[in-house]
Every structure is written in structure tokens, then in C-alpha cells.
Image (cartoon, rainbow, N blue to C red):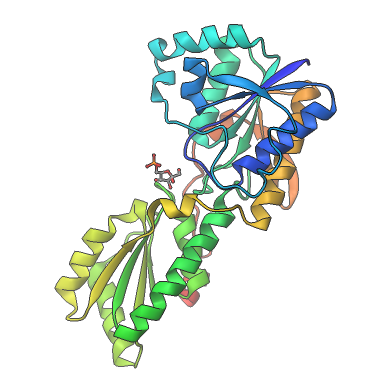
Length: 319
Ligand code: F6P
């Protein structure tokens, strides 16, 4: 292999930069040129790319976001959106490609293999941690820690005022991030897309908590379980007490990657590149039981089965 490409797709995740750094350094060390495609899948259509060297990725290990940038480009699923991609690929003359992203990016990766015969290896990066072939995806740990920090701060003011706070956590249709935020912050309640909930019961439990002397109530709502504004309105209807709402939103996607994410991204980035250079493709690298494992891209084009709370007794005991 002489030249490989790399792009970051979908929503950004802290740790994409360290992954990119590992890709560039691993390939360059073996004399392989790396082409970075800017703006993700849209950049592949627009033809925005340039050579990356170890110098261009120096100092990015601690930077949030992705220096390559990323745009949503649903047009790649259509024939019109695919045409310009073919032209860019011709110009770049790549022998293979590394795709850093989530399930949508892996669908794109599969298409690159099937339609253009380009060997691809995927690296899972999404704060949602909903990719089946890995225990943890790049960006999840940083997002979890940002959310924990935010909820801890909200709890201080909640306690001072005796208020109820409804806090919305990202995760798309998947509740893992919210579930772990709830456990790690000792939240009173958590609403998840995977589990039906009853707001009358929830309001009763919160009232009982105050009757026992509690001075606050934190309700974590996964964005896939309903809007925080709706839950706040419904709680206000049921409990005569101050209720406030916080939507954590995109702050969970920003910030410097945690130590865990830097190491995970470096390991996955290195192994993905080595696999590609060794002639393997159609695979995603993941971390399973703390070992680097591969699974097919196909397996990772859909989000994990809804098994977030297999340990429901743990959740009942801790939230
Ligand atoms: O997939 C990552 C994620 O942050 C989800 O948690 C969220 O639902 C979505 O992306 C938000 O997407 P956008 O940044 O396009 O609004």
C-alpha cells in the first residue's frame, strides 16, 4: 500500500483527534502516505482533501472535536450524492481508507467497499456508545464525565433551593449514556428509551423522597425517552414544588478527550491502520473485554440491540 485516506464522519466525539494522530503516525512510520478528507462524507463529494504528516497531527492529542471536521451528508445514500464521490476517489488514488465514526459512517464505509472496491477499516467513535462490535466507543467516556460534572453542579443548586431538576442527556435512541450518568451521579430517577415509565409513579416516589427529608430530586432523561420540556411540564402538573430543566446538549460532545479516550483512540487507531496495511478490510476494530477485536462492518451498521439495562436489579438498587 502506498497511499491511504482517512475521514471522520457523523457527530464529532472527543478522541477523534487522537485516533487520527495514531493513524497518521502508524502509516507514516511504514512509508505510507495519508490523505485526510476534510468535512467528512461531504468532503468526499466536494473533493476537499490534503496530505497529513506526523507534523500536521502534532499537538492534537488533547484537542476536542476533529481537525478534519465532519458534516452530515445523507446524500451519500442517493445516486446523485454518490457521483461526485467517485470523481474524488479517482483523483485521490487511494489503496485503502480508514473511517472514524458511528453506524451511519459504517454504512458509508460498506458502500465504499461494495461500489468502489476500496478496502476500508472502521474505528468506532460516538458519544452514544451504541456500536455492537465494541464494549466502548471513542468519546463516550469524555461525554460521561462532562455530564457527571454538570449534574453534580446542578445538584448543588437543587439542594440549596429544594428543587426538582429534569436533566436531558444525549444518546439518540440509546439510553446507555443516560443510565451511566444516573448511576454515577446518584440521581433519584432515570427515564430511558428501553424501559416504559409512568410519570404518576415517578411523581409519587419523588414526593415520598421529600417526605423522608430529601432536599432535591434529580431526574435524568435520555433524549430518546422524551423531551425534558415535556417531562418538566408533566412533573409540574403533579408536584407543587420548584421544577427546573437543563438540556446538556452539545457540551457533551466538546472538550478535551479524557485519558481513557486518548488511550482507547490511540490503540484503535494504531490497530486499524496496521490491519489495513496488512491487507485486511471490511472490518471494524473494537475493544472487547479489554482486547482489540475485529468484527465486520456489516455488523456495525446498526446500533446495538436494546440491552442497556440487562442488570435491572442493579439499576433499581442504585437509581
Ligand atoms: O450521535 C451523537 C449525537 O450527539 C446524539 O447523541 C444526538 O442525538 C445527535 O448526535 C445530535 O446530532 P446533531 O449534532 O446533528 O444535532
